[in-house]
Image (cartoon, rainbow, N blue to C red):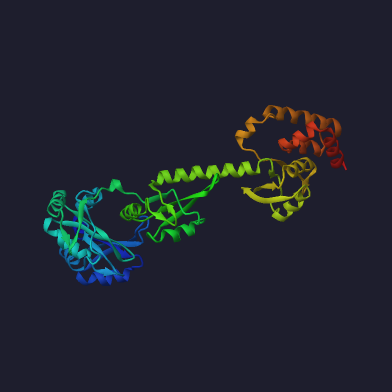
Amino acid sequence: MTEQKEVSTVYVGDLPNQVGDDFVLDFFGGVGKIVSHKIQISNRPGKHSAFAFIVYSTREEAERAVNELNYTKLNGIPIRMNIADPEYEKIRNSGRGNIIIRNLDSSIGVEDLHQAFSTFGEIISCRIQSVKGKSINYGYVQFKNPADADEAIREMEGASINDRKVVIELFKPVDNFYNIWIKTLPPSITTSQELVEWFSKFGEAQKAILVKFPDRPDQNQGVITLADPEVTRTIFDEMNGAKIDGVTITCDRISNKDKFAMLSENKARWDNFKYENVKGRNLYVKNIPADITHDELQTEFGQFGEIDSVHIKKQGVYPYAFITFSTEEGAATAIERSTFMQIDGKQVYVGVYYKKQDLLKMKFNRDEIRNAKSELLKRVELSVGQKSPLFVRAKDLSDDQIKVLYTNLDVYDEWINQNEA
């Protein structure tokens, strides 16, 4: 029973992605009784179509459906049908016996291509590549027997179809690539949207990323991702070396793995550039109320100097903030004066934001900080007693605040006097 279902199942590819159950039962049920069916949307990158498996009551009905309905155009695109035989699927997935026909006349339909090559052997898949329903002049034919593909290549060498000479060769999936790395771009392109519009003269990009470099602001690059490897190869050959808008375009292939590595590396470069640009001015602030607002932090810290930006973030339910001052002097004043700062009764932790590698290089290292905290707590205990809230708040100070109190007796005395008051 299971075997009968397998051989009476028809695969239907390149269906419109909005196709529904009613349409399948009505359209495909006209040639035989449908026992069951399943529609799925393709998850291949850039593939905006559906496919279906339709189980007929008999093998004869399944074959009739393929013979009568195969290559019927729906929304201008021919559907592809074949018996979903496990043996066929194994051959199709292996890629064996698959040939590519280039330089096809745009008037050639998939049924014409099938007819032209069916004399060489049984065909299990035939399609013409198109964009928005329009042929882009190449197609694929896969034979059940790889020897038939070899014969077709030999016999059709130098042949013409519709008075147009075609090139036929074995299709090699290993040559597939979907990304074009454009290393030189006209300086007028400054956004990803402008890159998409500029690239549209070559083809439709599935995705476009403009890559800007912090140390080379006038040398932007782009990464274009397309849906079909053959289209990618054709555009690559056309674009590479072409002179456009006074710029000689240089391109390279790039795999997804290398693309992500390149983008990650450039992100790290930008992160370091931004870090160095605000180094000494960017403060890390924590132990702040959960409901504190941007404006409230701006007001609290704006008294110490001009602020460029305030960013509040959360780790779980605990908020923290990054406050960037316009000058290092303003940031230093904020650290010194924030030793007196409490918000909603909580001692605010304020310190210069450093990367870990910079912290390790600092002269005031962890051991010195630990010793300074110990000495500071002893001094607080002598001044106001261990039960004083000041003793607890001293533990909550940042390393930078500890430095201020430990190295500046005037600030320490002011901190004691202000908090005692």
